Every structure is written in C-alpha cells, then in structure tokens.
Image (cartoon, rainbow, N blue to C red):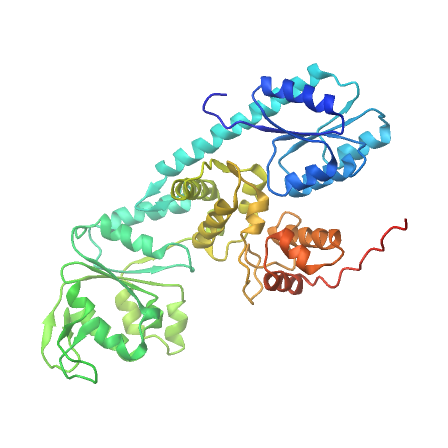
Length: 469
C-alpha cells in the first residue's frame, strides 16, 4: 500500500470483542480502522467522514443496523456496507440487499471471508486511485494554452486555433457564458506572431457608458470635465500588439461606429482632437449574444459585425463535451490541492457521476467553482457527493435551470437538487422541525436554510409526539 491512499474501514457493533478482532484483521491488510460502539455514534461519524467499507451490527440498543445502513447509503453512497447479525433471517437478508448491503454475515463471523472482502475492496480502492492519478496526468497532456480537452469538439477547436493564429488579424469568438472565450483569445495571441507584444483585455460590460470612447481611443486635455491631461486610449497602448474586446455586444452604438472606422482605416482619434493617430493592432472580440439577431433588432451595427466576423471561432458548451469533464475535474482538483495545501486525489465514483449528469448552464466556470468549494469542504482525500451538495451557492438564480445552482422540476434521482431536498427533509424531521438545530447540522445560516425550504417547497415539519414514560 506504499504511496497509495489508505482505505478506511468503519466497524459499528456494541460488542467490544468484535470491534477489537475486526480492527486487528483490517489493519493487517492495510486499513485505517474507525470503531463505533453504537449506531448513534456511527451516525455522528458519518456527518463528516468517508469510509470505503463499513461492517454494521444489525441489532444495537440505540440505533439499529438497518437505520445505519440507510444513513450510509444516503450520505456516502460509495461506501460498501456489510451487515452482521447473530439472529439471521431470510427477510432481514433480503431487506439488507434491497437497501444496498454488499454482504450479510452471521455470527460467529467467518473471518476468512471477511478478510477476503476487505482485500477486494482495498484493491478496488487502489485501482480507483490509479485511475484518478491517470486522469490528472491525462489532464496535463490534454492542456492547450490553458484550455483542457480531449474530445473531438475541443481537438477541432485547438486545431482551428493553430491554423488561424499565424495569419488572423480580426476574429469573433462566440459561445455561452463560462465556456472560456478569453482563453481562446489568449491562445490565438500566444500561438501567433505577436506573442511577445502586449495583450490588452477590455471588458465592454465593465466600462461606464460615458467613458467608452475615452477609454478606447483616448482624449485631449480639456476635452471634457475632469480631463486634466492628455491620455492615450487602449488602442494606442496596444499598438503592435493585440486587443481583446470581451462582451462586444455591450458597446454603445456611437462607439460601434468609431470602432468600425478604426478597423477599416487603422486610425484612432482622441476625444477633443481632430488629429488621427495610426495604430497597428490585432482585434479579437467575444460575445455570448447572437449578434445576427442583435443586428436585425437594430442593437448592433451589421457593418461592424461583418468586419469583426472575418473568422468566427465557436467555443462549445460543456454539456456538448461531457467526455472532457473528468480531465477538467482532475486539473481543478490538482490545482485546489496545491493551493489549499490539502492532499486531494479526486472524486468518489458517485460524485463523478453526478457531475457528468449535470447540465452546466454556467459551463466550465461553474464546474470550476463547484469543484473549488467542494475541495474546501472536503475532509479526506476524496471529494464526495456530500461536499458537492454542500458546495452549492446559498442564493440560487431566479431563472429555473437544471443545474447544480438551481433545482429542476424534472430532476432525476441522481441530481444534486433532489439529493439536497431529501437531505434537508431528513434533517428537519430528525430535529422535529427545529430550524435553528437543522441549520446547525446542515452547516448553513438560518437565512440560507429558509431560502432552501422555500425553494424546495418544504413546509412545516410536523413535530413527533414524545414517547410516554
């Protein structure tokens, strides 16, 4: 097991001798062993810890083994669970299998069979670890100028960038929010002939409307109130280099006309002067809007669109290249592990399946943010589905979207939204509807809990009557 992640074995039994014997067996085959003398102690442990395999006694005085099994399947679905009992019946064995138990042991235990099961789970965990390491290594190989992808859509995009970069002077980069349009622009710049010149980024949506012209083209002293000195614009600053105009659909119409003139003549005119100045810049523009529709509606100049769209580079949405998600996740987990100083190796299989099935309206940016939050919350070496649920933003968008950030009306049982709703309902029921206690258990402030209760339509939880003495 040298160099590999040490698997964890959780043993839950109210007999001390069973705990001691199973600890001795498991430690000999390379396990870290956690023992709990009752179901309630095990449930508390499951709130924050992941186990690769758990052996649970069926009959315990406080919380029964079936309840512990259900809790493990809900909170840690990748954990392999074995039930143990001294009073075996066909009914309990069938129920245990239906609830997800991988095996059913009768007492006195067959320790040889248990040891073999532990070895199998250990070896599967080691194979999973090697797979995660291979995915992280593949993520390094799949990187191109800061972008990651091995699927056909991204390989086609990388090839197009390499063909265009030596020659293109003007290009329009299109794609949804969060797909990585700026990375495409930087790749065109870095693989082109001006890589040693300036690369100037202009976020068109972040500039005050009244200052657009001055920011882009400069101004003369006294041109307007506050213009106390001559100032070159960003086009002059980027002379002989490259300008990236992000969110170009946000440009005001008067500035669009002047930008068109710069593209056609290669000259800028500072505000307050009549003197043109020559500039030599490559112009890359990006938008998440349909500029053809914007032009048809009169909100974007069609002649500017034609001038920008000498070459269009379309960036695919993440849902159209799901095969790249494991490589992206591998890269993001490696990055977070280094930055946070945590020993993180990857995701559990169920967590990875959840990411693969999400719609990702926020694309790669949303995936990166979810992985970063989950890595911060992770206690062990693997990020679990629980951390993905907990890493969701407290405030969801008001627009219904089937994503990690917003529950969908038709969400399937594997979605994070449904998992979170069921988890909140179980916690609320466990504390008899006490929102303060529920918020503390869930790790939320009360406002965040109230928002979730409202979002999921969870009403007042009926309080259970206390049992009579």
